[in-house]
Image (cartoon, rainbow, N blue to C red):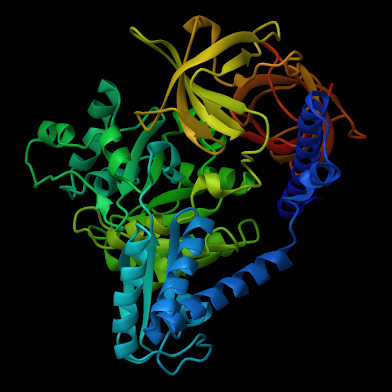
Length: 617
């Protein structure tokens, strides 16, 4: 029987291989068009030939990059301690280079640094082994603090002391950040918030984004609800969006709320998205998903279409990892999205019950199905190191928080502030490829017309671009023009791959647009729409057998539609739990835009399957 881990590795390899193939083809097509317009020099031809291999970097390149950064850091600190004007100017140029290379944000560490093993295990002492880096005295730290601040201010940035230890091994971590000139360039981190019903998802987001603590009766969550029935029941039923902005200095942008007794006053006392976007040097977008079993389809769509950088799993300390929490954890693992666990309600739960919940979470995370390394975040230094290395290994941070007393919330905010931005993932979102925009929301706005919201999977878009929207029910594409665009409710003129933006479209009826459609640049040959496709699948769970003509709901990126199994290559002609096969699917309602290498998840009731598209028919 194929294990989930082996299958995930295989489908990741297929997806990566197909991605490189598609990008090479797109690059060669673009070069061919240029060549038709003007002759190409031999050197440019060579560049076009190598375009597909940019993202196929080896892990050794990552290791050498890290060691190179450490050398640059040490050189900057040595130059700043010399006090010579020429050295100061050289250090400033190096700092400017670091900030440019890292999209305007960098964490500079000074002094001896502890080993991650001891830090994450919580047994770090001054006599622990594994300390690395150049030891510094307290006096040197003070000099470097002033010098680094001066240098960063000269290049137009701000600094913030994230962590400082003045005893034992004196050390310091500083955040260097450049303010963004425009909302269209502000880095964004997308986090999907999941967990069982009544675990405290909306309350946690309300406290994180509004600043005011909860009263223990759900006051903090009122401002997040979008519908009247949600306020009445206290349960989220839709995909809610909330944002938390951070200033260049690293301070969270929060409304000035005193502890008001009236819930309506709390609801209205909030900063507008546009106001936050203009002030922010970094934005964390939370996708607040439903916890109730009835809304699993909505939650699953939010996870597959929102392209989150991480999943924040909220677990109530009083209830433990129960019900839909396990379901959400399984889906996040199947989609290979990094996971962060927040254990809430630690103020009202007896210590023995909290310990029981934590033991259960640790046991599940260490199980063969998850194979994660749980790390309890109990200090700022651990939060900084986890955030800067997040996603690269199998570590799963665990925060213990209380929305009533505020315990642990500062560690969560520090962690979120330092997470790498979603659009920085060059393998997932390529700016140098043709435009591809997935539609995840559709509205009809008075005096504006049809507005679509979604994620730019590749390429660039600007106001006034001629684009094709489709496929419609017949598989055709409609020509339209991007009239205007907004990002986080602030008007922008351009958008790049990896960003979540809204487009107002010219001469398009609301009824002719649906979720799962794509926008591409207008070309002579529109992209292909697919009705049938082949995929390699692994059945994660089914209580009996799957046969031909079996129907299930398929989630593939922003596409969500019922599919029918037309053929399967299994010798017995039926599929059971744990079986793997090449299956031919057919969309029931209308054709969709899908590509080879895209991951798919299908479900019907408790039946779940994971796979990858291998061929379009």
